[in-house]
Image (cartoon, rainbow, N blue to C red; front, side):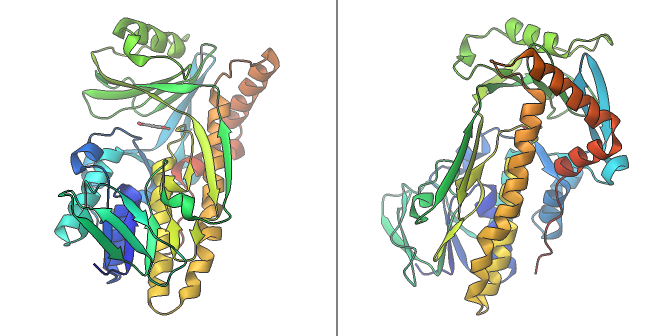
Length: 391
Ligand code: DHB
């Protein structure tokens, strides 16, 4: 098979890129190790920045986010047992949207079907021979067990946090940060506890009250990364969550059966550069953020939009357009790294924290809720920095 752009990975970054290239009349083939059903059943984050919503709607992926998603006009920062509202509309004239990643994936996969996109799920492996070749080749084994070679002009690694294609970025630097905690995430059958999301700092640690539908809620609380979620009873989970959100206003979470639970690892990671010769990286293949603030998916979509733009220019004869990809992507990547790190350290309790740090943390939270300038900085990052105009 010959194609212009070979994309490894059919998560949101890989599929959006394929969709955007198609709009620019550029051929692509997407190969994915997992089956479509497996990807659909992976629960991930649920918040889209305004720019991500615009990308999906204005480029014709789907309007479903506008009809089935929920526009959120702010968040509650809760500390000292009191909720403090940050109104994004007032602060930065922007909003965020509750729309789970599983739905983003479904919309993108459906759009690729609708437009005749070539997406191959369930391929056994995908090995790139040499990105410095004029036409690098992806060697795969089809779902039926047949070997297959896909000759490309450019290869894009959209193969997630455990990316193999990342290994081909010669001379790369990798930056890590580990955190001494994780998130215990649940899905439960209960009505929403609040109108919008509640990010809660307490002496027992962080909790996040998010939502999915009128009858299904998503919540997380900071935990030891070594715990086994399956050993926790529903009662124990509810009492941990209730004690973290408790306060003088008697705020309580409506409880219900917990239908899904997972422990989410916390890690900050960046690979630089994001391009080597005829290979680009997009999304988690190049960077991961801790989940606080829900930047991972948004960053992946922004990478895909930028890569599509650069690849379109390259396709029309300006191969040097790819030279600028990494630096431009990294600018947003590091802003998102800082934001995610900041939200994390602002709201979590590190196991070795001194009383000094707790007081400093509370002072910072008061600053962010009392100072309009402070609140705006947070609101701007949360709702997302503007996207560069698409060609
Ligand atoms: C969700 C996840 C996040 O990390 C976050 O900051 C907000 C919401 C969610 O899954 O709903």
